[in-house]
Amino acid sequence: MKNMFVLPVFADEGNTRIARLLYILLWTFIIAVTTMVPVAILLPETTTRQLLFITTVDVSSLLLLVLTRRGYVKLVSWMVIIQVWVIATALASTGGGVHNPVVILYFVAVLIAGLMLGEKAGIITAGVCIFTQLLLVYAEEAGVLLPSVVQHNAFTIWVSQTGAMIIVTALMYLAASTIRESFDRVYRELRERKKTETELRESEELYTKLILTIPDVVIRTDIDGTILYVNEGGLLLRGYTREEVMGKNMLSFIAPEDVERAMENTVLMLQSVLGPREYNLLMKDGTRVPFEVNGDILRHEDGTPYSIVLVCRDISDRKDLQDKLRTMAITDELTGLYNRRGFITLAEQQLKSADRNKERGLLAFIDLDGMKHINDVWGHEEGDRALVTAAGLLRETYRESDIIARVGGDEFAVLALNVDDSMPEVFVNRLGECLDAYNAGNDNGYRLSMSVGSAFYEPDNPCSLDELMSRADRLMYEDKHRKAV
Image (cartoon, rainbow, N blue to C red; front, side, top):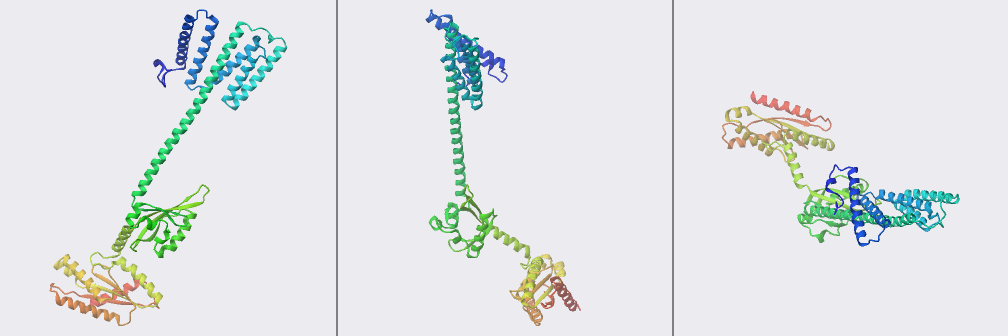
């Protein structure tokens, strides 16, 4: 049905305007013949004038139909306007008279058709009609036109009848086109609305399923923090029931130490976009779990906030990994003591504390004697065992609050605070006792021995950590040389 007026020979991309014109003329001829022949057979008394009248109506109707079908609605409208104007002018000029009701009806039809095309077309047609009528009135008064009392001849009657039929046909087609365009517009709007509703429903379904299945906790609160919605996934993972969460204030699920900061961040979020923040949230069993919370504000069209949306992600695994990486970064893998980086970081913090509290500090630099000999004779695995044993002996010797580290291949460092003048000797004697006990109970073919150098840190005469380590290192080598002698 869509292409019922398109002949196959012209239904391709190469059809031209000439081909379309030939096509229209062909159909005009076919309809004219199929109309005139039955009339001539059934009504032998039909005159040539009547047949010509029928043919004219058919041709005009077909032309308007084809052009309208092709989408040339404006062109059809202008054709009708011009045709009616010509008929009205011709009728008035050939005896119809300017004041003839039929002539006036024609001009009214011109105005109606023009108005259907829009405001500008209506103004143009109105101006043309007024100018034409004034011109005809002047011509009639000047005696150029036949007076309106003259009896109409056959041609005038034919013109009037034909024009009337064309006007009725044209107005019907224009009305049909207008109605069709209106229905098409309504149909398009309904189709677009249905499409939009379908897309919106699918989008809502997608987001609903995402919210229901993601492991994160999704919460919506009012502007005061009262929970209005929480997803099922968040409830199942955290052990709460919906009744235990709904209607409660979000702050009641935040660890007390983070409540004030959460309130401050909420105020900032109302003013501008705020990035993720970390809080400890309280679980049902009372445990604190670190969460990364992203939030945003829902606002009315006038910008007034009415709700808060929060997405809370459990970052316990991330925190554990960070702690492990941090520990690995400052811990010696072989002995489990701090490495050089860890020792320097913690020692500098301790020295600052010593300055504030006016506490003396003691830094001991310790070297495992004969390490090269152990590696060369008994192998590196035995050398590693000797280092691990030395680390254990240092733990036994010094206090838990002291910082013990392996700062080099066979070198160790210890920082102790809150010490007096006797502490270096106390630590050395205690280390000697631990070494003697170990050597007495193990027959490894070698004896463990350590050289120690200790330097005091005086808060009244502070120095840098590097300087303190250099002094202790120098004293340690002096102790090693004394043993060699």
